[in-house]
Length: 240
Image 1 (cartoon, rainbow, N blue to C red):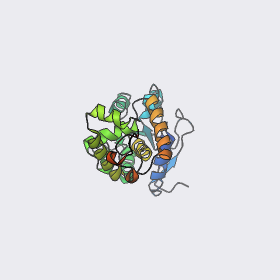
Image 2 (image 1 turned 135 degrees about the horizontal axis):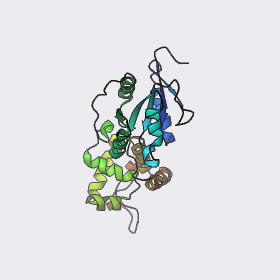
Image 3 (image 1 turned 90 degrees about the vertical axis):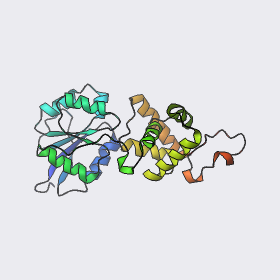
């Protein structure tokens, strides 16, 4: 039951993990928000105060659904921006959007932004910075972004011009900061924190790699150093 004064919020995203994650996050604020589902993206959104719109939808479509939500409903639209794809936010603004939050936003800040959007107030300044929630450095963000795309350690060292040992050091720091122990867990964390793959094909590839590694990998602390590996071992050096 909706509590008096609580805003009604609908989430639009092509990814179930994002839909469920946001719904669960916002459920911690029942006095301020009530999350509902739109019967269809092109519905009238009757009774909805704010629509939280994931810009990944724009990557998969022509944007007509966002135009409808912006201009064909009475709800306010808050863009949920993928930090790795600021171009999608620019596209959303070209269609008429006027408010956005980063996927790295904290729960309380997200609720505050929703309330500001509902009141048609300007939002606090946002920053395009991945990994702020975990305190990742710029280089660690680059490494985690490539891990999320499913790249191997060898491919990452080549792309970023790093030595295997340097990469291993970065990966260990990343795992410690985001509190994971396997590469599969790192991929899952990355995707749910805005490290969106650059294409549907990459997304499918990264997801399959992540799922496989969750079941096959050993914890980071248990993986051996390259110098300790048995002769002839084909396993890649480094964590994950």
